[in-house]
Image (spheres, rainbow, N blue to C red):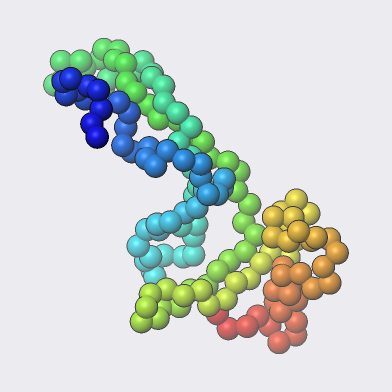
Length: 147
């Protein structure tokens, strides 16, 4: 069955936004990370950002030899929204034959109630919550478990 178009025409809409359906999760997820360099100290390897839209700016070009040097040009820019992030823990990984596997997760001692609600439904009535267990292991006389 074909459409009722008599002649061919360019498609309408970008294929980059397919499939056009509701997202399964409303929070973003970091799916790829840069190569790890063991010589560098431990650092943040990913940061969430969402494409919020596009707009344009007028800027002066500083490119000697170009015909638009020292002139104003209009360029498209992307607006990236980066919501505030709170570090609540550290995850240690080990190499296995099938790739990286999480080895140990250590949560922060002092976590706000708003953040705790993200992990547990009844976070204030739990007897032994996750962040209390990891902070207890760090504060014990034996010291932290080997990472």
